[in-house]
Amino acid sequence: MSGRHVLAFLALAGFAFAVQAQEAPQPAPKGPAMQERCAANPRACERLKERHDAFCKDNPQRCEELKAKREEMRQKCKQDPAACDKAREEMRAKAREQFEQRCKEDPKRCDDMKKRFVESRGKRHGDRPAPAPAAPASAPPQN
Image (cartoon, rainbow, N blue to C red; front, side):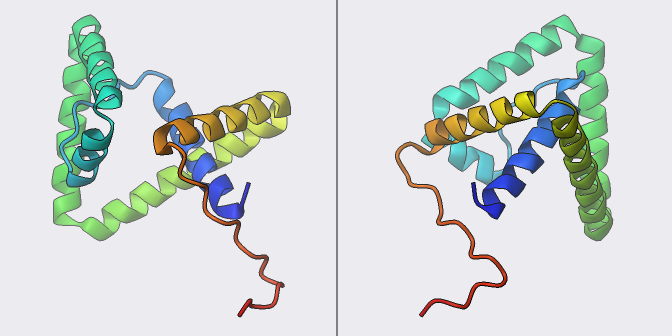
């Protein structure tokens, strides 16, 4: 895996660990990027919506709490985008640290997750080839 793939994997896996604890699945897509992804893969978005609906049915109070928290964050981000970006980067860094710690504790599980990530990426992106690996910093530029 290239450095970019590893970083993307770390970010996604770390986020998954953080969310997996007890957060609800996100509701149907609202932003243009998600709408575009859902247009390309409506089945995946439908599954996401079903999970969200099931969670909210089973945990209505928690679902409302999360909805209020999300709305509060949206308002804060509108008022101060720089602070929001900083907080988002801090969360990603924390998730990355947690992921790396878990990989040190259980390398086999980490390898399994990496394998699943690569497989699911293939399913999401079809037959599109993975980007070329990044050249090491010490490598001379290619012409």
